[in-house]
Image (cartoon, rainbow over all chains, first blue to last red; front, top):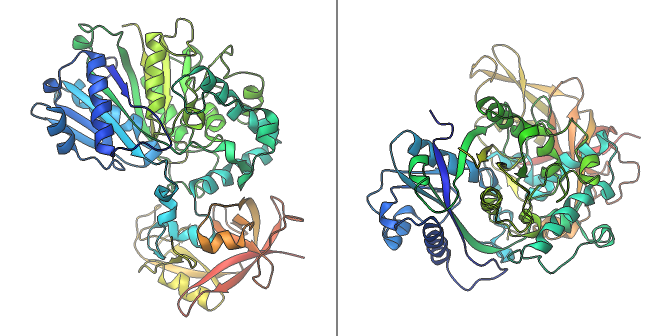
Length: 383
Length: 143
């Protein structure tokens, strides 16, 4: 009913920068037009939209700027870093079920300016669940991620040198990607070990970039996709996941805080899929902070519990390893656009157009934030 | 950015928690029907869906489950104190009650050094009075 019924047929991205002199709406329009041109689809064919609840460009503004047709479906997915695959999956469901025919999903974000950091707008009096953490000085997402990582490193006897392999691996991919913000900057182990701490045990290089830009994709039914020029990235499987007792970012209150919502998403995704982790050729794991990559590798069952950092250190996710990961540089070294760059890279791998192309990549996984309610997509090339 | 410490607003389902903190007592919400403990406090028991609840005063003894040391950039109130230690503490005598709190000296002054701090460290609860309504619990190392 859903499996292999839809495909991502167009991708578009603006320039990425620390400071683009333009509005989010302007950037969104440009990225969507690029994605439609890439797909070879006329804007008046679009009748479904998907974006993030955090997105500030409204659907009607997007539609009347781009000249879309009459719309039949739109939805927004919550929880920031957990949203990209959910927004796409929901539009794909609308298309697979026949409600709509052509969907656009976008994210436009000007977050290069430090005053746009969400935690910096913490209110004097807090009534939602952040009241149980922020008054005690656990204020930023990096602090919340770091809490889990110190425990993980303690339980599995890892050091900062072990964690460094994540940021260094992704930087090497960015060094091959001319569009990556860190394209020309190499990262050595010395650079990493001497970096300033942001939330010990996490340092500067464990954090995603602060950046401006917009990204869009186009989704159609597979039958329409097959009439277009680009090789379709077929949406094979999709699931969301939220674990019992989940608490957004401060997900510390369940039976095992090291067992995140990613375990829920992964279990359902593999159940819905014709494939196993060993079949996946390339993966893009959401990486606002470097711990999310080893934790996601384990949650999606690419390795046993506690082994991920050893395997990353041994090259498991490197370009010549068995599972290349975040091959455009990811949020740590390409751009931070709430994970939408990871979706584009997953599509490029299937098309054969990545700057770190995996030979004959046919099965491409993309996930969202390990610390929030989240989602994942399994894309495939053949049909 | 706000200059002073962000404080918890009081909701109907956690009013007693903050009142007890003001009296230097840590309390845990339990279901009024099935006695299931729960944290953070909330309206309904996730086990039996009763909205009846009660509060049990606890000693507050705990073990350090994990901790972080935030550094700049931070909210001004915390940046002035950085480096400081925030812990996730696992309350004794409960299976899954973990509370976020500062790890401080026993008198509530800032503890910047992690000497003697380790996952598994034994902790006691202390109370940091912010105003007449709000007192925030913290933990300190048992000696």
